[in-house]
Length: 330
Image 1 (cartoon, rainbow, N blue to C red):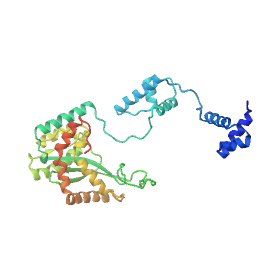
Image 2: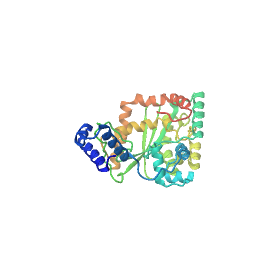
Image 3: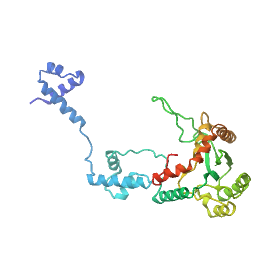
Image 4: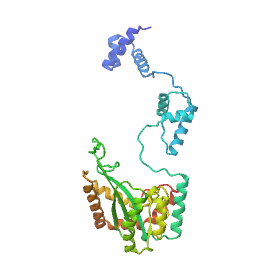
């Protein structure tokens, strides 16, 4: 039986020389004994400390199911909520360890649209109807609004060398912003207008009445185009819908949560790529001038792409049906 001091001496010497034979020569011990001393010490070091884990396999399964349920409903998964829902008699730190054991990571969420079963079904129904009716997309005026910030979009990205971090010069309070309204016409024309102030249904309708309807009526004739808009609250309020039905002969019924079907979303992406390519802005006038110049540049250089965005609407509809109502990648 070897003393504790001899064991400690053998482990200490091995830690310095990292050679079993060297320890054997210095302490005159069998090599197998030295290996056992070192192995025993390593196992002692690796042994987990702290209280015994309190959750059993059955409870871990319940936690995993609850987390997946919350995720599918688009809700945040936080320890306080899970503890309350499952009535678990453990601390939040125990639940944090449980999530780690289940290979869950606490991380920032990406902005994404959550589609319910009803949303998906309506997307499929309208896609099938438009295909069956051979809807004339060349007569459809697609519209949308977007806010442009002085410092650029949050989704800004760039190829970088792996050892470098992406760094952006962003002001603490964002600087300022401009709200833009745009329409895409089948010949590749982009109509771009600036919206000023806080927009509600009354201001939105005044804007359409003063700036948009006269221009579209003059270009197409009052009964020869279909007006499209999404389901934002200012668009579909009782006030807005009453005016739209009275003043537009055709307003396209649009499925909720369907930006992937609107080609103006693609136009916004192309405009942002130009506007934010290499600069930030210090004034509303500079930012707005850049947005207008980007539209002019797109119509001059990429008109065929703009035309194709509407030309390939039937393909978007087919993709919605194939994906059983899920969002497409357009």
